[in-house]
Length: 169
Image 1 (tube, one colour):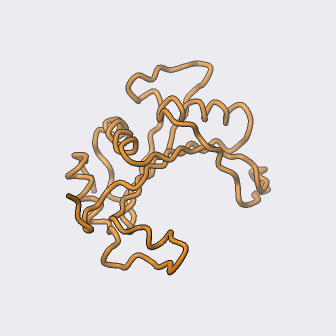
Image 2 (image 1 turned 90 degrees about the vertical axis):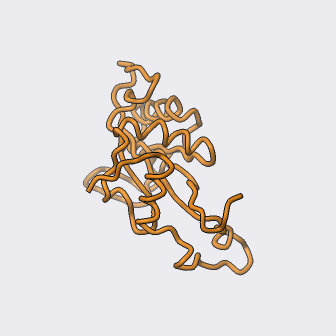
Image 3 (image 1 turned 135 degrees about the vertical axis):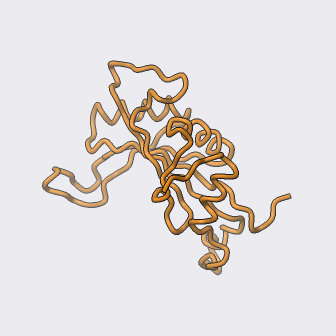
C-alpha cells in the first residue's frame, strides 16, 4: 500500500525543439513517435522574435507526454544512454529533473536513417506525491502545502533508489 508521503513519477515530457515548421518538424515528430511509441503534439510559439523570424502561433517543435508505467519504462530506457549519471543541476527546487539526449539513435533498436538525420531531445521528469487533485479541481482550488511538495533532495534520493541513478556534482 502506498502512503501519502511516497514520491512517484507523475509524467515524463519528451520534447524536440526544431525552431521552424515544415519538413524538419515532420521528421522530428516521426522520431518522437518511434522513440516513445505515442503520437506527438506540435508546440506553438507564444511570442514574437523578429531576429529569429518567429511569429506568434507558429509551430516550433513537438512533444510527447508519458504517464504511468510508460513514463517509468521510458526513463529506464533513457538513463542508460547517459550512463545512469545525471548532474546535480538537472534537478530544480520543485523536485523535477531534466536532461538531454544528443541523438535518438542511442536508444535501443533505433537505427540511423539518412532521410531523417540527427535529432536530440530534452526529457523532463515531474515527481509528485499523491494528493495533486487539490490544484486541479473546480471547487476550492488550493496550492499544495510546502511540506507536501517534493524538494530537490527528496527527488535526488528517489531517483537513486528507484532508477539507480548516480548524481554527479
